[in-house]
Amino acid sequence: MVRTSRDVLELSTSTSASSSSSSPERAPYDDDTDFFTAGRNDSESSIGVSSLREVTMSPSQSRERRVSPISRLPPEILIGVFTKLSSSADLKNCMLVSKTWSRNSVDLLWHRPLCNTWANLQSVTKSIQTPDGYYSYNALVKRLNLSNLNEQISDGTVKPFQMCKRIERLTLTGCIRLTDGGVCSLIYGSKSLLALDITGLDAVTDHTLKAVSENCGRLQGLNITDCSKVTDDSLVAVAENCHFLKRLKLNNCSLVTDDSIMAVAQHCPYMLEIDLHNCRQVTNVSITSLIARGRQLRELRVGHCGLLTDSAFLDLPKNLAFDSLRILDLTACHQLHDEAVEKIIESSPRLRNLVLAKCKEITDRSVLAITKLGKNLHYIHLGHCAQITDGAVVQLVKMCNRIRYIDLACCQRLTDASVKQLATLPKLRRIGLVKCQSITDRSILALAKANAEQRQKPMVASLLERVHLSYCVNLTLQGIHALLNQCPKLTHLSLTGVQAFYLREDLINYCRGAPPEFTEHQRHVFCVFSGDGVNKLRTYLNEIGPDIAYDTEGTMYDDREGDDMDTDQHLPGLMHATGINDDDDDMDEADGGDGSQYELEGEG
Image (cartoon, rainbow, N blue to C red):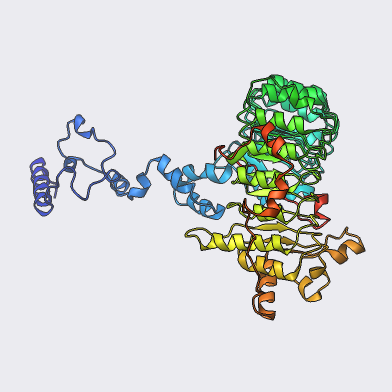
């Protein structure tokens, strides 16, 4: 039967009344109402609808309004949640939930595609080359790292990535089969590139860096370590066109001269870090200019730049402080003397890490100048500075009590007096004493006692992690056993050449294997415990006998001790000259082939 208009009106009124009687009205913002369940258009009443109940909805509209609250989250919140996912598989699953989730997770999954295996690389390149994909994946790639496949990567391998013109960070470390053609194909048109790392690509020449200078005006970081064919021609072009450059690594670029460094100093005012390790043609004039112009420079490494002399630092502008400089590496700058070190400390009062290893001309005078750094000094490397004596080391520890790492390898004038004072450093994590042949068990027991006392303090644990004692021939099992038991965080202990260890078959069972290039003699005396080997050695020594008793009296430094006072007698003139007083504010060859060297920490 056909219903009249009157019947329809009565039915509508009856339905409305029934709905009203069974569902009481809610307050506009009661406990069940929140931001996510509120209507998506608060202005619907402006079109003349007095109540949502009077809106006639189609079935599809009704289902849309029943979407779960999480699907109505703003994109910013969804993306914030997805960024907490560390697994690529989880992000992929998120993309399969809905179109909304897919749109907000695809960037996170593709901005740094995982290319750690050949299968993953093939999958990525296949998606990038798909012409009718749901997304333009080539436009989503922002970071590309192929270093895990290094020797498998060739010019043909990187060809599919030519389509990715929005890459910001490109890492090709160790991809030694790449040539100028392959690298340039990734660089052409890459206006967004911020960082490029082509470490170890010996086939790369000036052609690649000229392409960088022409296409990558926003470049901030460049690492061409071991690119031995690069010359000043291209580096000058990079400096002149990439004014935002902040980090530059030129390690072992033997053709680099002062021209490149002068161009960097002149055109790159935002430089923060520069590494010129083993750039043997670099001289004083460029280093002076680099420091003087680089007011934001935080890290300077010029190790093995043998042409540098005191003038590189003495010619710096007077009465000008370089407060930003935190890390300075002068390894094997043989022509530096005390005057240069004093100028460095005067000009850079906030140095945190200082490396003077193999600067053989420096004496106690330099060490006393370094004490002016006070609480700023965290890392100091004085290996092979053979003229340093106990008195200077004792004063250094007194004035710089926040030292975390110190290396005194081959400083053969040092005795137990130095190590007993070093043991008082509350934050000491690593100590290098390789070939300090005058030290005895007294030094090791002092380190053990200091760590024992640290552990007794509330909320303070033992900090000592790495101890290098190779060729300290006077050491015995007693001292090392005490050190092991009092330093639970110890992860590295080198004892190469110490007869009490390398001659005992039961002990060397726990040391790691010698490097294959070692000679027969080096293998015979090799004795380095690391990682789990340290724990196993500790356990074994505790099992074969009771804890070794040891006398810890007199192992901490005291100004009244006669022996230590004697070591200070030759220093008063130098201390007066440097203005030091107690009121101031608060391993390569040296390892003897034991592999115990470790890198400079880039703190803060």
